[in-house]
Image (cartoon, rainbow, N blue to C red; front, side, top):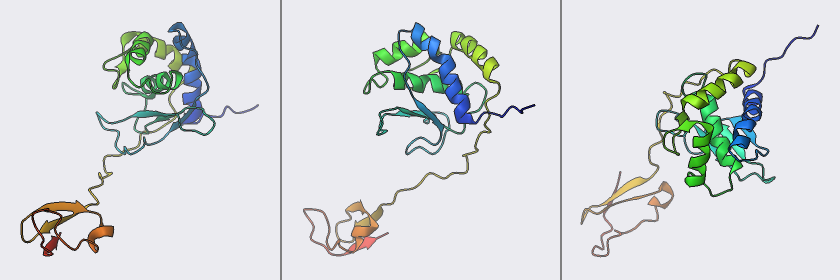
Length: 194
């Protein structure tokens, strides 16, 4: 007798996307191949309220859009399914559509509510997703706690002119080459680094 293997989170999300296909078709959109992963959005490390919790990228050399779902998402109100549907809408619409009117109409037809840049599951979407969740079972993922990840501060170094008080910032690479005040009205070489 063979054992049933638990799906990976990427397999679960890919299956969810396949089960969502009829919703997109009924909205007039033909689904196309998409790769789905769990990972941190580009340049965004914290999945706190108001931050990016999903992204769609079109930059793959084979032309297949790549969807990333933030690892803080688990089952629940802000679970992966509304975010997945939002990102699939990006993937299925032409490059450059962004959050414009065609995108807004599509996510509304799917049952998502709210601003196009921050959609949430509406009642109709929740009903449709319950049927999908019943087929797939629980999302096989434990949320990552990103609360201790510190936001990177600036890498720029502040330089102040000791003569006129002008303040500017530069990278460490250029600190040694700065040999005078950047002000057009000052000629000082008395620069304070710190």
